[in-house]
Image (tube, rainbow, N blue to C red; front, side):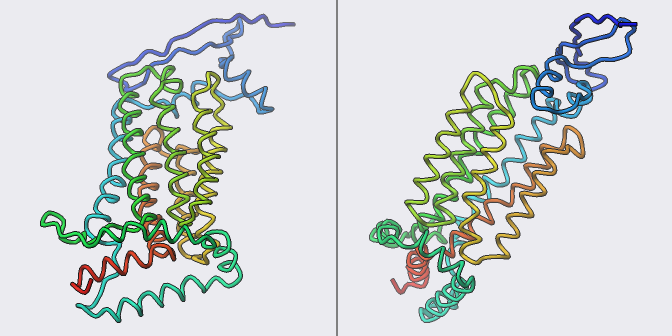
Length: 335
């Protein structure tokens, strides 16, 4: 006996009392009413060679309430504030014992020892990221501006090295667009969130941040420009009419891999392990949604450690060393 099917459309309306979000999905229902599957989701999954899945369960896990979206926006703030504080507090400057400039040299030698601790990997890193004189010229170019004496920011004794500054800039700018997107999601129907311009802009600035991060971890202008080419192409694809989620996720993953690769090649294995742990936890939260609609906020909280880890790499670069010592001399009055 053949069961006839017919296509219908149902609406899941928002109920303030239940907290359920509203959306509209196309379904296929058998004449006996046994099954409900999303035709659009089902077709997409078949094209990708995947099994069918429960559309309503998928939507219940992924669609967030306005309160959850507000929380998503708020959890982007800690990384922004930390990026600003790290610069203005002078935390990027080597801590000195009084005015002992010799201590700066000893600390610098400790950094050299750390950089050479990676063996042949460090040699590869120096060839890839430290073999161009203009990298150091670029980094040292604005030290001629001298010391900074600001009553408002007494710990900011000089401009940070370019790698440190670009990490701070990235840590402050990208969250602005993420917050904008999540605020818009508070008022948008779920079906309109993914194609919305603010979502596209948010993801584009993820690639902007990734390109900048590649300089923050390598100190190499050439490596940075190579990452700019890749991430610019990825950002442009975000504005195509057809949305390709798998491709977009893959591109974000690759952009992350490119900017944490220098950490490994520099021989900073513990720091690299911390990067990996953070991204594994964040990826688990994003993919599995362990606490439902609140999982995206948890995802943001895991990534709130990213600016700190980026700064820890940026201050150890060869191209950052001279400017950090200069800032320490300004702090001690020896400059």
